[in-house]
Amino acid sequence: MNKLFKPNLEESQIYGNQVSNLYYLLSLDSTKKIEGMTKTLIIGKIPCVFRFLGIPSGTVELIPRNIPHMVGFGQEKTTAAYRNMHDLNLPELLSLPIMLSDPDMIFRSNTKPNSSIIACKEIEGRNNPIVIAMKIDIKSVLDGGAIVVSGYEKDNSPNEFFTRLYDNGFCIYDGENKGYFEDIKLGTGVRDRLPGPIPASAVTCTVPVDKYLSPKGISPSDNQSILTKSGIVNSYESNTSKLVAIFQEKEDLALKYERSLTELGYHTIIPKTLTAAEITSIARGCNAVVCAKTQVGRFMHLQEKFPNIKKIGDIESYLPTPIFEHKLQPLAEILNKQKTESYSGRPIK
Image (cartoon, rainbow, N blue to C red; front, side, top):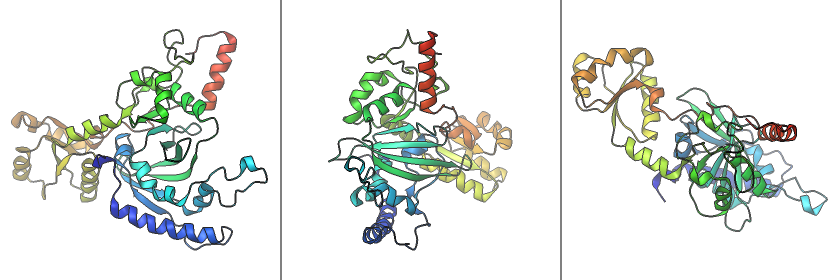
């Protein structure tokens, strides 16, 4: 497995020890008040996949009080068919860092598409993918995070659920793994879409029905671009060939610039001072310059003197398109609109 899709071992070990202890205490008595249930567990840093999807640097956290729901403690019903609807086991909880670092698919949430996502992973022994529902917390372009709010096997009409997400532009990442999602992708035309950040054209209901029809007769957003695993690898490797000079007088911001850029593969250098001599010295060897938006004009003259500098810009110009820049309606609203317009005989727009 490519290192970009592996979790940090030390972070995973710390998380594993913490979640194992809580799981054990819950298994003894899930109704008993357990110390530490309100303190979040750090699963790890925002994975590379999420960074290239436009989620800022930060951490992925799990709120312990969500664990009983995820594993089915206290959810036993009198009707056998509804018993333990959520039934993740301890090995699967321990595997969350791996599932999130190397998911099979990622979709925007069907209910809260502008603040949440679902990461999907096929697990041996299960008939359907496990879905990890996550709320994305974006504080700024440099600071963000994610909170795992639920996890479960999608066993309630999964094919219909995932197909509708594909058809209506909710898919934002394809891990390109052969398996469960292959038939769904083939049935919706996703295989013909180009890799890259999801564009404005991915907003659903923008494609004429008579022009783009899937084999199932549903109108997919075939002009949508989906970030792929190979696309991430290519972008990361391209970034590793660049040395970016960080000209930012505020030390805390300079360090945040560095963290964000290095996570995307860039090599960085931060001058100790911003004297003309040091700026000139660094400019001779760098490929790009990042600085505050108000300072871009100050450094533009460097490109005339040093042709090795191919780009000068603010930090946002080096980051992937923000994950929720293009808004989507909840899936239920979209389907209802399609149904209404179908009944009225009007084309879906």
